[in-house]
Image (cartoon, rainbow, N blue to C red; front, side, top):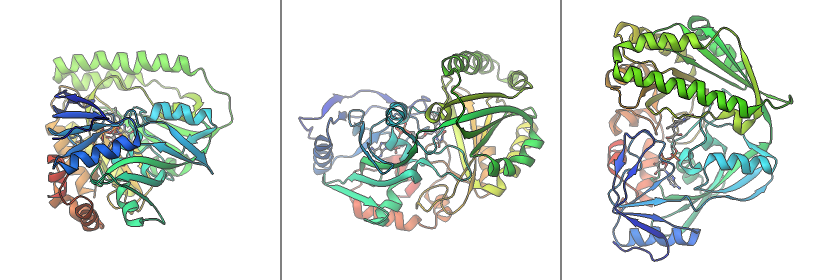
Amino acid sequence: MTTPTSAIATRGALWRNWSGSVQCRPQQTLAPRTLTELQQTVANVAGSGGRLRVAGSGHSFVPLVETDATLLTLDAIAGVEKIENNVATILAGTSLKPLGHLLRDRGYGMMNLGDINKQALAGAVSTGTHGTGLGLGSISTQVEAMTLVMPDGSLRECSATKDPDLFAAARVSMGALGVIAKLDVRLQPAYKLKLIKQPMELDECLARAPELARSYRHFEFYWVPHTRGTLVKLMEPTQEAESNTALTGLLELILENGALGLLSRIVRARPQWAPRVAKIIAGSIGGDASTMVADCHRAFSSVRLVRFNEMEYEMPAANGPDALRELAAFVEAKKIQVHFPVEYRYVKGDDIWLSPFHGRDTAAISVHQYQGMDYREYFAGAEAIFRNHGGRPHWGKIHTLTARDLEPLYPRWHDFLKLRAQIDPAGVFINPWLQKIFGL
Ligand SMILES: Cc1cc2nc3c(=O)[nH]c(=O)nc-3n(C[C@H](O)[C@H](O)[C@H](O)COP(=O)(O)OP(=O)(O)OC[C@H]3O[C@@H](n4cnc5c(N)ncnc54)[C@H](O)[C@@H]3O)c2cc1C
C-alpha cells in the first residue's frame, strides 16, 4: 500500500468508538491537512487497490468506520470558509461544538441539532443525525450543497440543481459515495432558545405528545423504564435574557452525569436492582418545571459522560405513542434490567434517498443500555416492536437488519445502490458492515 508523503501517517494504531462497542487496528491512519492532500490520499489509496474508511468523531455505535486497511481522519480539514446569504461553507472535519461558537460569533445559528455536539459535521450528516421538532428535518436537510472526493481524487460538487441524484443520495450515505470534503449549510440569524423541563405522567404525556409536537418548535421527552415518570423538554425561540449557563452546566455535570454514573455502576454490579434504581431516577425528576435561556447551540446540546449503547428506530409519527406504550408493557412483562431513560423525539420528513425520515414525518424512539451491560433481550424486544410499527433503524445506532430487510423500507434503495456501484465499482469505500447492510 502506497503512503502519500504529505498526509500525516500513523501505523497500526488502535481506533475505538465512543461506547467501546467497536475497535479496529487499521494498517495506517492518514490525516491529510489540506484539501489537496485529501485528494492525493484518496487517489493513492484507491490507485494502489486499497480500501479506506473515514472516521468522524467515532460516535456511531455500529462498525461503520471499522477497517483493517486505511483510516482517514479529517480533524485538520476544519473551519468555516465563508458565509453568504445565510449559507455557510464548512469543511467536513469541523466538529459541532466549535462550529456552534464560530457561527454564534458571526451572528448565526444552526436550525436544529441533536442532543450532543461532539460529532464531526460530515459524520453527523452521513448517518442522518437529527434533533427534535416536527417542523424541522435532520441535519442532512440543512445541507444545500456538498463537495465529495471521488476514488480517483477528483472533486464532485452536488446540490439540488447540480448533479441532483448525487445530492439526494450523498446527504445520508455513510461514507459509501466518496469522502465529503465540504458542506454548504443553511443557517439562520443567531437566536436564543428557552428550554422548559417539566415532569409529566406517561399516559398524559403520550396522549398530549402529538399536540405538544405541533405547539412547540422542539418537543421531546424521556421516559424512565419501570415507572410512569417522564421528563418533558420544550424549547421555543425567545428574546429573554440568557440564564447563568455556567451554573446549569455545572449542575448538569454533577446531577445528570455524576449521579447517573454512580447509579449505573451500581446497576451494572447488581442488574436485578435496575427497577429500583429507575424509580430513584424517576423520583429525582421532581415536581416543578425548570427553565433555562441559552444561545441555540448551547440549548440543544447536553453533556454525556456516562457511556452507553443505543438503538433507535424512526417510525411514522402517528405510530410513536403506541410503540412507546408497547415498549413500556414489554419492559414490565419481561422485567428487563434497564434503568436508562428512553428518548422520544419528532423529525420532519424529507426526500433524501436513504434518510430514515424519507417521505414521512417521524417519531424517533431511542433505547439505551449502560456500557458493559447486556442489551440483547432489551434491544431485540424493542426492535420487534419498532419494526412492527414500520420503523427504520438509525444508521449510526445498533440494529440487526441486513440488505434484505432494509430494501423494502426505502423506495429509492436500488437507485442508491446503482449510484454507489457507478461511483465506486472497486469498493474502495466499502467495509464489512456496509457489505452487510447493502448486500454487496
Ligand atoms: C452520546 C451520543 C449522543 C448522540 N445523540 C444523537 C442525537 O441526538 N441524534 C442523532 O440522530 N444521533 C445521535 N447520536 C448518533 C451520532 O450522531 C451519529 O452516529 C453520527 O454519525 C456520529 O458522528 P461522528 O462524527 O462521530 O461520525 P462517525 O461515527 O465517526 O462516522 C459516522 C459515519 O460517517 C462517515 N463519515 C465521517 N466523516 C466523513 C466524511 N468526511 N466523508 C464521508 N463519510 C464520512 C463515517 O465513515 C461513518 O460511516 C449520538 C451518539 C452518541 C454516542
